[in-house]
Length: 439
Ligand code: DSN
Image (cartoon, rainbow, N blue to C red; front, side, top):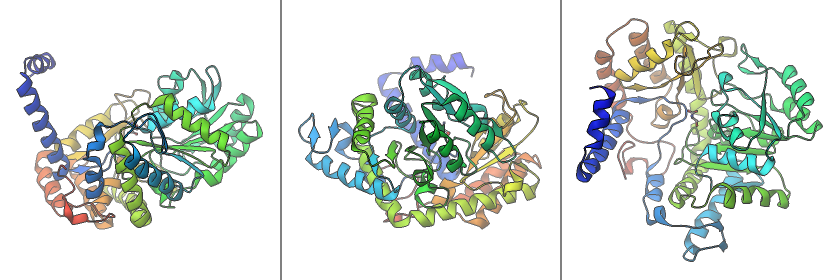
């Protein structure tokens, strides 16, 4: 069936058929992940109690403002939830300020850019080609705020900004915001050096911790708010294992600055802020306080093992000289630069029930035809896989991508491996609800 046939079929559905089609497709997607290996580095699954917190009447309610200062009645109970959440966020992320209203990492970034800069100001950031997020670029949030972006020179060997050249850039440009952090994020950013240069020229340091927030909270990556970041943004659903949403955090003790950050979020970039997801985030933070350090430690241990195992299977794994990774991610190159071999590899893995994403690697210039894969182990870790399973997963990759076995025959082994890992770990009441079932 070609695309136009599919579009035709979709537009001819009756209302009842549309409902059924959505429910069927949702169940199939759940099934795909339940029997497969979810390895997209920006995803995760939520615990039974987070699911319960999300599936409440709060999903349809409004609470503009802050706890105790609302524009709507009926918010007293939600105020309790948000108050617990703000306090937990300060504790879990070791911050002096926390706003937990953001509905995504990108919205957190737009809010931070609104609070910290005005249109026409300059900003420095990691380029998308080197792994920066689209919201750090003119095509994304940085453009929405009309900021002029200069990107850091990149050290490909170390997979981080070239320190001396980046400090020189900051001193030359004197950006309003020195933005660091990436979506392709293998190693901690050498933050202290960059922050010293930034503060010397009066720049505010903003750290986008979307991908690595759980590792930061678990104390196994870096501690941006103590290494010079003034503001930290992040997603609540990547290595931090909550529902989809965002955080806005700061090390500042200045209450006027806190008000600026809060105002940037509301009325700045959010009106409704999805109260059920806030409740889910609060439960996730409480569970993280209890279990997060062990979870974060296991993620990094698994990622290192996965990188080593892929390399032993014969894959070209990036950053060998640094032990492949210090985060949840591993990067593999599958052919020449711009060859599109990463896209082909991702499709073959999907046929076996292994869900990944193609990714540009240093040198690639075509986002739809990159040479690489970005692989994350945070979801597999969350359902209890350890280093032995990482070696097994690497061998499944090799059967498909190196020994050219038919992915469909590997799919049964993927399913078999996954069948033993059906409950979310590192949470309360783990076995009260299977990981891949609805609410
Ligand atoms: N695009 C997401 C990622 O996969 O990194 C972040 O928003």
